[in-house]
Length: 485
Ligand SMILES: NC(=O)CC[C@H](N)C(=O)O
Image 1 (cartoon, rainbow, N blue to C red):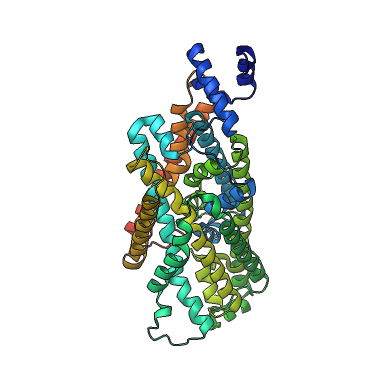
Image 2: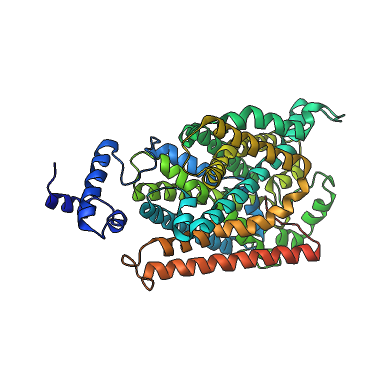
């Protein structure tokens, strides 16, 4: 048994500041609590979290977080680059990646103080029930939006892939070429079983596979750049427009020279597209909960590795996609490849790879929504299989119905994405942090809190900006890039 002195020493040296802080008011009570805490630490070998003892390895956690980051967002990046130019795009991409990592730091530090690694609990600690509701609702809306965008890809791309591989030239209502049936089949046979897993950690393997598919996508995009003439020949017009362009030097030069900095009416969409591409914040804390030997540094390390790898892949995909089509690139990169040749085998494989990748991302993105629903409606309840299954089935049914019956709702998601993404990345982590970290540890005027306040301000600015652009777009009737995915 440790004596009082060595216990104090132990606390100063080993236990994170945050834990010391919450336990610092009454020394006697502290000691009793500390002993209890210490013995629980000896038993469970945790670092102050009472919620769960994780078993997922570092590598698997990187795969899971990488998979959570990488989604349909990647398909809109070339378009974003076409509207910003290479250099400005790189600057903005770097800014969003760094801000994203900083925001994870805020979340991790706050959760270390609260002791429970759930976004909703941070909201609860900071603002009581309204805070918890706000976090839960933002996560639910954002992730349902993301999952629907993934299933849209399945609905519209999968039939084309099957049709081309089976060589059906004139489809006449075959059931296996009907996107709606395919969405339901994929949901039941692939997504549901994965979504029923008790823990996220089990999805590490599928996440690894999903990322492999995206690597294949990236390699193909790079390969295509070097095997596509510029200006490219549009399959639909069977080359006439482009041939005239080749003969005309000025047109050629204009069309096939990358712009370093470009500003136009679509430039404003870059921020929402980039912000969406880096959203992974609802998944960070669930992944942290399951991490083996969880410490803030270790989880920050997992996040930074995932962000750096995705940052590199995002940049390369955007760059080579842009260098293939230049100003002709559409808001969804895969559509642009169809203009080259819809039956090109490589492009069909790429579509299949992207389809697989986003399908395997759905269960990861569904996890935090189920957790949010559990936190909002069944707090303090222990794990219960029927509830776990019922929520997953209900959510998947809802998303399937949205994708099948209300495909026009994508515009609404533009609005949701423009509000919930800045909330989840910027505003909530910052304001929760400011409220949760005790004033004795960091006074209101300390640098970290002022930084956090500026961060919330940036988020608010992004939100207002994105919303105004969407509204302007709607009123002027051209919704070319309403969501970019
Ligand atoms: N939870 C999410 O919204 C994930 C979105 C993801 N970053 C994407 O690019 O698709």
